[in-house]
Length: 239
Image 1: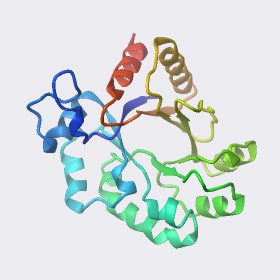
Image 2: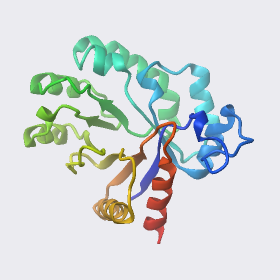
Image 3: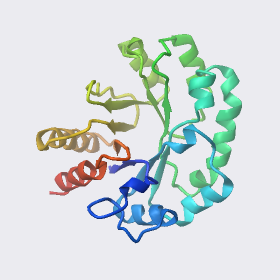
């Protein structure tokens, strides 16, 4: 099984220049094509704000090789406005329709459902929402309020084969709950040392031995250098 490593986003102008990710002569419209020469997947944060145009989806298809995978973050109407209620299902349908060309081409990876930090545990609402998700797609959920972090919620996600998004930040450690046929990991710390990266690489290798793909995305920001951690992880895994 594969370990797909990439970054959370690709279109940051601050990433261009000497010592940065993009060479100085690369223009923003060329960012994705260049990015796809370095990584095989990317997390799409922009869909949380607005659905992509048909032209943008077509560019995502043509600017990347056939094995490239996109991991969209679900639109905020679903997670932050309607907060998993049925009123958000029309947006869910619209989002999947817009992303269908990626799905047909085999380029759609897991879709991340990131809950707002002030949304507390509600088992009934969660199960109703999970029951509405098409099983033709891969799904991951990120719970940002601590009340969700229980064995019962883990059981519910496993029942619906939805991945628990393992998220590591400067303030919180990842929980490593195994609920789906794949792993979804978001590495959000400011800095990673060799010991930490080797520990993560070992987890990805173990997941592969268990028949699970891993989708790993390193933190995006304008000033940091997330590609350093992504590149080092790949080097460790390939050594």
